Amino acid sequence: MGRRTWQQSTLAGIHDTLRGQVDYGYDAEGRLLKHYEARQGHASRGFRYDAADNLVDEEQGSVAVRDNRLRQWQQLFMKYDAWGNLIRRRSGQYEQHFTWDAENRLITASGSGPQGRFTAHYHYDVLGRRTRKVVNSGQGEQETRFLWQGYRLLQEQQANGSRQTYVYDPAETWTPLARIDHQQDAAQGEIFWFSTDLNGAPLEVTDAEGAVRWSGQYGSFGEVSRQTEGFYRLSGLTSLHHQPLRYAGQYADRETGLHYNLFRYYDPQVGWFTVQDPAGLAGGWNLYQYAPNPLGWIDPFGLSFIDIIGDAAQKTGRKYQGAEIYKVSSKVKVGDVTFKNGDYFYIDNLHKDHYETFSSLDKSKGVFNLDGSYNERKSAKATKRKGPGC
Image (cartoon, rainbow, N blue to C red):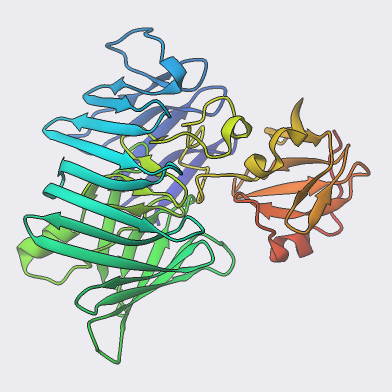
């Protein structure tokens, strides 16, 4: 996993044998400003943002990002429909077109991408989970079906009978622990183990003997720019040729380069969602933003606990351990827990994967995952915890 350095609870640097030295810099709001890799051929990347947290292209200067719809950043150009859904995306030699249904779910994508020219169709169940995708390209038609365990991906199934089953860390809801591969009708599966980063992104995958079968070099916002699979193909060794998991809850689509993020699709080139937050204005002032800092924050649903709370809570202007404290102003229910006027909550600023909630008397009301689900294990530990007050 390598060695990590920290500065005020944010990741400042990583050093490991596979990726070398990588350094990060942030502004006062915790937004990523710098990404530097010491390896030869890797230039330092710097970022600027406007007041609404939109990425600002240095060459464009101070051009306003209308409606927070990012239309250009470096060599990436984007176009949206009247509802704010991405309908065209051009990056270098790739150009893609997208069609969305009445619920703002991606149903078709076509054009050229990392795997060449393609047409893809996507299907969902009544809960909004993607259950099937069919991709037609120069390699023919490829169909993949998806099975779910609640809102976590449980299994992929290919038309030839192959399937991949995912197992998650019981202590970290969205962190993959292992994958079991079955080839067609084989009775015995092959097991692979994940080593992940703080945000749940797989760094390496090893087999039962401990050999590295996949490793990824991540860009600033989650795009995997390097994978070991190319090396293994050239050398004649066996690699894990298909490893689509990225940030927590994300599945990388090879055909488009986008990441399926359950209720939305994520663009890892710019760290931005391709459609607005389904929660509307409750999702914050920028409905396309993924997170202030994707290296430490996660958004496995494309939604959040705050989305569920909605306008029943407001910022207090106070912080605890660097995290903003929100106060509940009207009665609201999240799962089986009812919050009343005077209750409050804040995000855990170390792991950034759950919310601590308290009553107006500073007694714990439980711990919630970022998606709004109740975390029984962490809630049990927090039973006697006293809140900081608001």
